[in-house]
Image 1 (cartoon, rainbow, N blue to C red):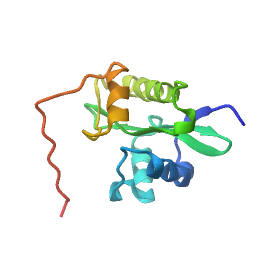
Image 2 (cartoon, rainbow, N blue to C red):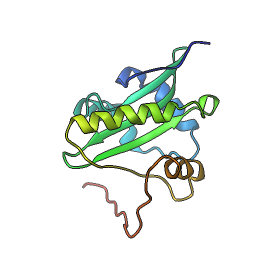
Image 3 (cartoon, helix red, strand yellow):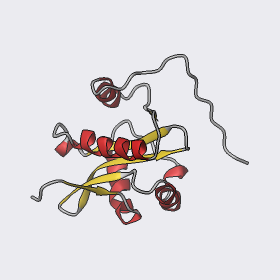
Length: 141
């Protein structure tokens, strides 16, 4: 078994990323996660998203971007077989360093309310839960 390697995410990782995301409890996929949409996201946010690979497969992801004011993390996922080894923390640190280099001073992330594993991870790693904010969503006509 090879050592985990963290590199910049590319669209070439897409198939293996989708496989990981579909197996990750608490992670919900949508049309926004199509290959074309992820490719566009990566082009717009070059150097901010990372994958951990082992034996040619994606074992972790940190999808990151910004809107010019705030950074956003999406689909931070680590295969259960390699959890507890600091993989998520290393990928997120790289994403945050990229945001800082771009002049972004704050980063947000979204988790499902009932995602116990994810919510526990973020709370235990220096992220503050916000209250008093409601999220509204709508399809663009």
